[in-house]
Image 1: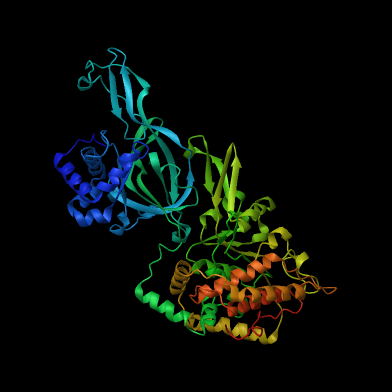
Image 2: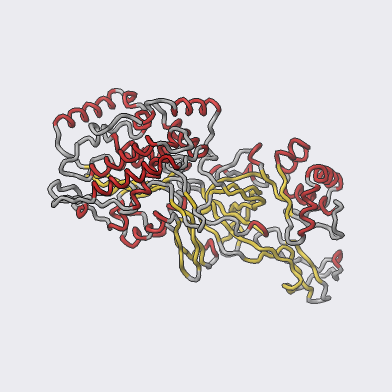
Length: 614
């Protein structure tokens, strides 16, 4: 980058804009200077006030921002000292859409742009030299060089315009006279749900300075505004003709919801409201989940409320109750477990799919690693659950995970956080996601003459954290087998015969809209009803028969009732949980418990158990 020079005309335009729209902000910063050293401007406001200035900022960001900083020095404030502020730009994506890492090209180099992704890993904060002070070994003059690249730049001669002797010389770096700022390196990667089948997720390294360090942690979904830059690759100390890209970050926006990237038009909103008022809503949503699979009505109902979920409740003491529902499917091979996972993965606004054998501790939770990214230092890398934060994690072949790796999700399931502790690092990341898991029985198929629990190769500490446990048994049933075969054959003859009433794209928008706009709460009028139902369940399932193996009802199941009732209310776009929401939640819980009676389980789960729709 060439040395920046002050442009009087450009500086005057910036001064006029800043005095008109940001004078009060600059005065506020002046009172806290030098602790506060940045001014954030709205690109959309700049474009409306001076489109010429905004166009120049987009095409020549370094020149524009330098002159904006120089303009601030000329603005009179309540303090005598000139303000040396950095200018940050927000809302660029209002006019220039965000670019995913896999779409960055040479045409974007040197332009101001926004990129979107999730933080994969980050280094610890280190000092970066901004201006290096070098002492001439011949005359003793101090020569200052701006460090605007990754590699350290040294003076080629003792410059006369800085008081030097003008001769070629050797120089000694003076640390005390040099200027430093906090620096951090962050790697972002395109979101898993945006990666095309068969493609590798693209990533790019980003550099942040000063007040932008430690703003994000691995697992965060972010929008970075800045400038795409390049540096030559090196082989054996020689520069190559090919270059590596990196992103010089100017502004950071952490996305707090999973739904901001989903475009919902006014027409979509009206259609969603129409669906929510339909008495057949449960039936329509049920038919949108794995429509090619025959039966399993109550299981599909549970997956529907899992997709909608309820809100996390934070108590005054800082503890909280999760709102995400966890579901596990344990069944014989060929009972469509993976199909249900794939369907939920495609319908969730944000989701990640992972297979158990590949889900190591690093891939599932988080891990501290030492590699070239951290230049030999330990860095934290986010695994699958932090990547699925505010979304859903679908884990297939759950029972095949290494026991040590599987045990790491205990805290993630209940407290919805994961921790990496190694080499002095102790970092906690958010994993606020629902988990949908699928597992096979210990002997690969259920024995209907044995209790179900000993046949599941999972510890009770893990199973107890799932809100719903469904067992799927492949039983021989002539009537059911004929209907299933006809359903499969019909879907081959006419693909449209299994088309859902609500398309996958609209279903995803429905879920995103409901989760973003509606937050149902529990009221006093249903408190007694919930307590009554909980007591009935305790009495019903606490009396075990000699060969029965049904789990006892605990306060965790009470939480499941509340979460399920909240999810059902959200499904109907309500902000209050009604008595029929509680009754629907109790019905689903009973269906899940009935599915565990593998001896008497209907071949097509709950086709004949469904009561009148709520």
